[in-house]
Image (cartoon, one colour):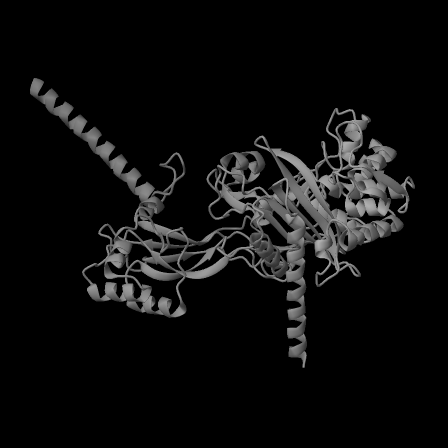
Length: 607
């Protein structure tokens, strides 16, 4: 009886185990063949995951939209052919003939070739020491293809930021920023278009136009091998790319790559290590060139420095170029005439206020005071104008406000601004007793709390050169579909407040011409194009040391103004030449010579 019970129990247990194992096997079969997702709480496809374990992937193109200059010259996204190497492949290093030939094609030794193939940990391209992909020539790519070495192949790859890329600061850069994605792109995060580790625009146009440049998917190559490192037949190489004739969208900027290159070369040839320069089209207010220094590498930005910040749209103490505002207010209000006289003895007699010329300028007219940048005369003029009018005319000339193109609402983005991180500038600091005479006269010479950006300075020159007319400054002309048709064109936008009169603009042009002919910028008299402008020096303190901000703002050619230019040289010694004026001159000379050469070449082709 006891024996029969034991047998019965054993039979029941075995039967239960049989049902259990049958259920497990059935479930595993169902997961593996039919439902490859539900077994994982993260909805991971187990078949895909098992295949992915034997896959190495290289991204050939992020799929991000390209950025071009006004003539269609690409500013981002240089395509080249690189040597792709996949580490999972079991290389036949004993195949001396192929390995030797590969080294010969690449111009490296056998040992270097073996080390190159055996030391790769992750799929990638052959790079030099600074991390840049080494470009293969057409003949090299063909010979490597003919060698047919498993896991080694020439592939086209797009580098977002090529070595010779222009306008680093205006374009900005992309990077991983989970906090930014969480704050600005919550909808894309929830829909799966973005992930916390996605690369997004962190600065510049890359950031402000992120929703349009994001793209629809990357282009990549995957290489599959079996457990022994041999290529899987029929699955060894797979190309994946999103095919869409409309996306990603592209940007056509207002930049002229030739002018941009000219300005960058002039800046880098100067002794200025920190500063900025801007070139505007006088008629359209388009940014033709924009430079900021120190420079940075957008492919490898250093987060421990602020070199990536665009100093062209960051405010700084302007010094005497602010006298343009004081002069405009005095002329427009009829408070001072061009031939009114002032007397400068070098010191005002109170507040410790003095002129840059210690012995003084003596007796001089308003026009001469502007040309010689006399502080004493402009202190007297500022008192006549008063703080309210100073503030009012600063706005009339495009200061004390953001001047980059903006619109609200713009699609689903709310307020949209082309320029990321543009400063407003200011005339008086908040809470400062602006009617205090000492504060007012310091403000009248562009010191104390006055701040403006190089972009605003260039725009101020453009307003004067264009007869007092003003409008928002553009950096991007249009957003285009991939097939070249227009998605959105950025039309002209008005700038806040009324214009200065054409007569005031005419007199200011006359004043600015005299600065070059007989004043503080006489070094510019012999330029290929006649110029007009205003120099400036602002006293600053850097790490406890007295330094100067040097400025020059002006336009060329004088007779028919086309280019409005502002140059800022920051943290300069308190004595010596004005490097901003000097840079203005070298840039204008180079630009004039380049245009003359281009015109001559065009005429010869027409013959």
